[in-house]
Length: 195
Image 1 (cartoon, rainbow, N blue to C red):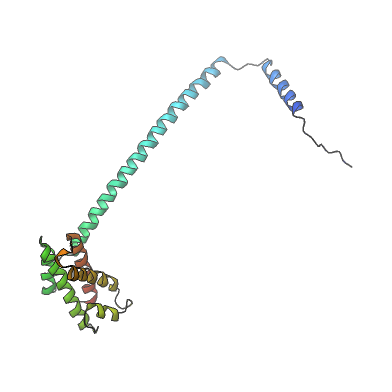
Image 2: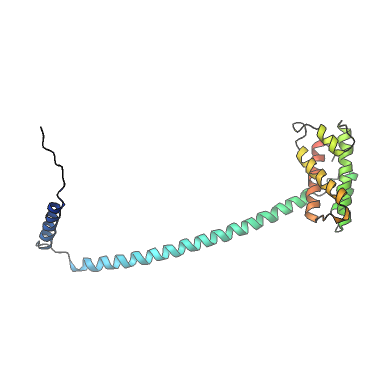
């Protein structure tokens, strides 16, 4: 059998620790006087450096947020510029040129006409492509999204046309809505080779 310790005598360890501490204190060597001063200066320097780094971190975070905010607005402006450029004419189709001219007008009634005429043009283009139906809605139901990748855009543009047709003058059409719808029509027509 071997002897095992079933308890820990903390008092014994504390007494030994006290003996070691007292022997070090009473030892013949001593810490030089300048070491205490050096430790104090290092402590003060460390606190000052920590404060400087904290201020720099806060400043960097503020600048990062400002840059992100400015970048967002720059990106948003770039998207609108790109969007406006996409609505421009292609020079290939007079009918499309007329629609773009109406959409670029400052008159809300011209915007409505542009979307209504673009939808009529879409119906004619779909008919030419072999999509049968009494209207754009029925023609789009016949379309296959694998063959016509802009089918979703055609539906979105046609939905705006329906809101104009059913809402009449009471439907509040904005310039942005007009540009978006005309851009959708443009992308559909480009895919179908109409412009």
